[in-house]
Length: 79
Image 1 (spheres, one colour):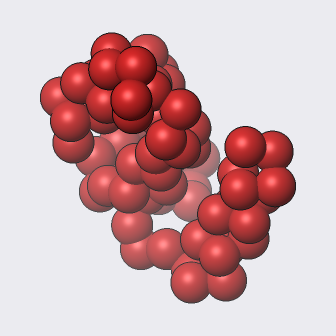
Image 2 (image 1 turned 180 degrees about the horizontal axis):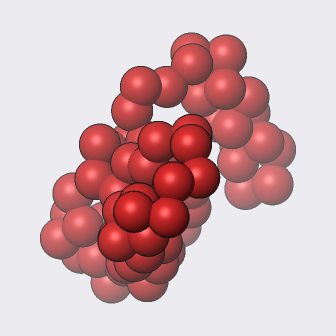
């Protein structure tokens, strides 16, 4: 996913295609347990990596369909 996104962002014909990364990488749980600091750090690193390679948005599974639809609509509205 990261490599595909990077390649799309490098090509003139595809660099303006919005990409939403949908992954389980970097997923963090809702609780704020201090022992989860590494998981939070990894989540932030994965998000930054996605945006660095050209992603428009980054979602972690499981996702809510309505949330995906809303994000797609927002992205298309500003494209």
